Structure formats: structure tokens, C-alpha cells
Amino acid sequence: MTDMLTTNETNDTIQFSSREQAATLALQLVKLARREICFFGNNIDAVLFDNQAIIDCLSEFARRNHRTSIKFAIHSSTANIQNSHSIIPLAQRLTSSIHIHTSSEQHQDLNQMFLLIDDVAYLHCQLSDSYKGRANLDDRYEVRSLKQTFNEIWNHSVIDSNTRQLNL
Image: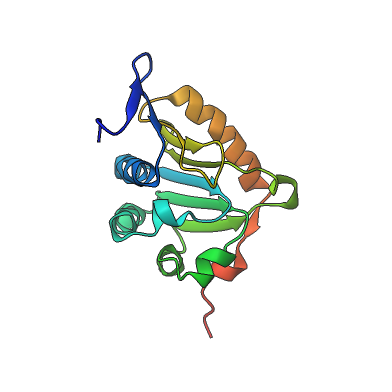
């Protein structure tokens, strides 16, 4: 992986510019998670989250203990539902650990995508439809900044009723 990605020597920021690199980094980051995984984007990104390896990691993480949390703050789940995204049934089974929220109207114009792992690691694409960005496995300062943005979005979001399982 290191031959595909460029690292900034000063702070180990990894620059990436393809779907494959972004997916590889997302899996690597999720494997590092101990307490919390937060994601923000237009939808639950299929490149990052719709493959068996990441679903297995998320499932294991969510079942690890009752304190683990996976939060998705997205603009819309319509594409995820139409394309039968594999995260939806997992979230429906693990409702106490996996939370999917829809962002409020005030945040709908944000067009970036980021994944935060605990208070340490991140993956960030300035444009959500482009897999060009940066990641870092140990940058608490940047994670703190992105987490403030995430918390602002999360605190004004609502539970995505489209992804909830109906118990009839």
C-alpha cells in the first residue's frame, strides 16, 4: 500500500487519489477503531463501506462491547436503499451500536466526506464525489477539528427512518 500512497514526512499524512486507495485506507482505519467510528457524507459511501471485508470489521467492532458506537450522518439514504447497500441490514440488526442519521437542511450544502476513528485517525475528501484526499493514523488535532464539524451536523440531524427496520 505504501508504494501507491504518498506520505508527507512531517506528520505522516497520507495523500490518496483513487477509489481503491480510499477503500484500502478506510478498511485500515476501521480495523484500528476501539470506541467510536463516525462518518459524514452525501450517503453511506459504497466504495468505502459496501464490501464484505469492511462489513465484517464493522460487525465485529459493533459487537465488541456495549460502549462501541458507529455513527453515520448523511444527507440521504435513498441511493443506499435502492442499491441494497449491505450496511443497511447490519444497522437494522445492531440498532444499539450503529446509528444512521440524516443531516438537517442547514447542512445539506456541505459536500465533503470524512471518516473519523476514535479521537486519533481520519480519512477526508474535500469533495464527496471525488476519492482524492488525505488520511492520517495519528493526528488528534485534525480529528478534533473534523469532530467539531461532525458533532454540529449530528446534533442537528434526525434518525433516518428509511433505514430503520419495521417490526410488524
